[in-house]
Length: 146
Image 1 (cartoon, helix red, strand yellow):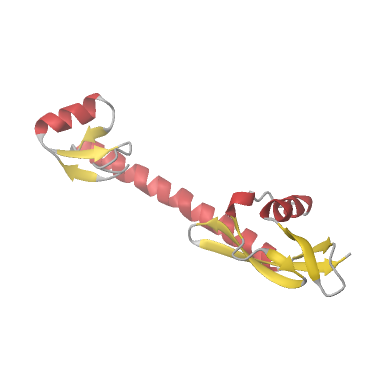
Image 2 (cartoon, one colour; image 1 turned 90 degrees about the vertical axis):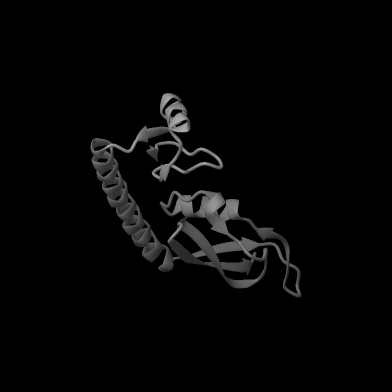
């Protein structure tokens, strides 16, 4: 029997998967709310739902692209304590970058700010921000001596 998974079930299927399973297992999946029978009506509803989700996803990507272009235009400036030879005491963290972006009107979570190497030297650094799985913005961070 074919079923449409409506929830993720580890080792069996992910949401929106359509799989062929044995009749007894299909009854278990349907009874426990993990799947729907792949009838003609359910397939039509499933396809409409997929189209709606795809449209929302495209809108999210478009919004992220807009934020990406705005982020490309700005440079964050950080004043840090440094020795005379240019060594920085500490480093600029993703939390500090997130707070500086909030002050500029961007609501960006520190968890999506990807700092490959610690920003612990003076100069301009590039930081990646993963706005979406398909959209990664590059932000310039300028670190200068106090």
